[in-house]
Image 1 (cartoon, one colour):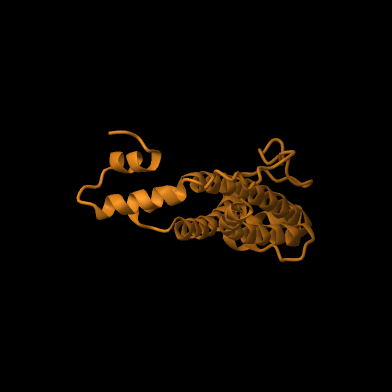
Image 2 (cartoon, one colour; image 1 turned 120 degrees about the vertical axis):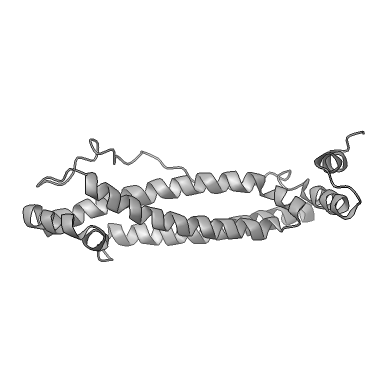
Length: 198
């Protein structure tokens, strides 16, 4: 039983490893922005005309503060949405065995692609919001502009239920047997996995 539970934990770790690496990237990015360890240049290059116009009105310090607020908001928002999407993917990834693909490899491929898309989306959202937000001499009104940070954010939890992957070997075997047989149907896979009578 201990060996079985150890295998389950090892399998769960393989799925969570890439998300943990991505979490560290996002955490470091947020920390650097909060501590002013990185130059804030996205708005000056992504929306140069508006940035230049506002620079003469409100000054460099206010524009840096505005960029920081917008950036942190969209990092949090996009990261929470990404985690929600990856939780959905993780719940259904075992079905790829029907197409003779590795669930772990497919999960990693999807996670990397979705993470890259999320980073691009963060930048696009920041520039888009900057182009529409009202900026005054004191900065922006985060409540009015819909940039209020939630009191808590969605996070990911590993479901360490021993039953989470318990039917995966059966599903793989059923899919392999069904594909190699003369007739492949979803019904035959379900019969073999769940022991249903004909």
